[in-house]
Amino acid sequence: MTGAILRRGFYNRDAETVARELLGKVMWNGDTAGIIVETEAYPGGDDLASHSAAGVTNRTRVIFGPPGHAYVYLCYGMHVCMNIVADADGTAGCVLIRALEPLTGLDLMRERRARARSDQQLSSGPAKLTQALGITLADYGTDLTRGEFVVRNPARPRKFEIEVTPRIGISKCGERPLRFIIRDNEFLSA
Image 1: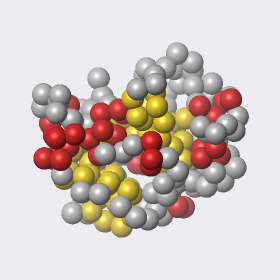
Image 2: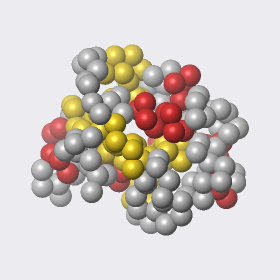
Image 3: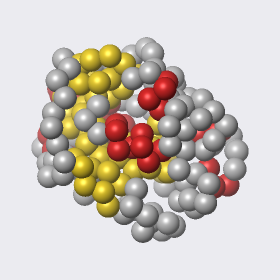
Image 4: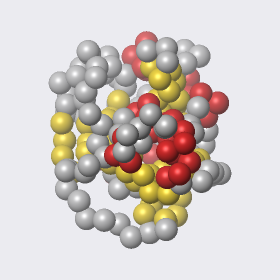
């Protein structure tokens, strides 16, 4: 159903490139998986929307570490969201996974997301997908290049068009065109 796990070198590039190239890849956590259909790049540096803008803190330490690790955090004190660390070790950069197209483990996803009215709502947002895949704060810092929580190449890559838009749901630097989506995919976030 899926190909090889993405190696660390895939993530050891700038966040914008990684965000674009994660589209169509498959995120697995245990018995659940989904195709990445929407991402946002947070390159650090002068990007005030990036959590790394405040420098290294206990919360952001993983962002400045080796690429290919999970940065999992609470948004608004209640929603678990997940980024993948990108760029070189010591350089801040990460990619928010905004939406997945459910692929396998749908019964478990439906159980975890009992309020979803349709399969399109299972993982069509950053907090929805973490809930559907069972990603929790305990996954902070997980090495996504090995184990059961990983990102893989698809067994058969699909052809799709990529659309680039400004990021959404942020107040700082929101105008930057750093959101990448698979055009016309029905599982995008609202």
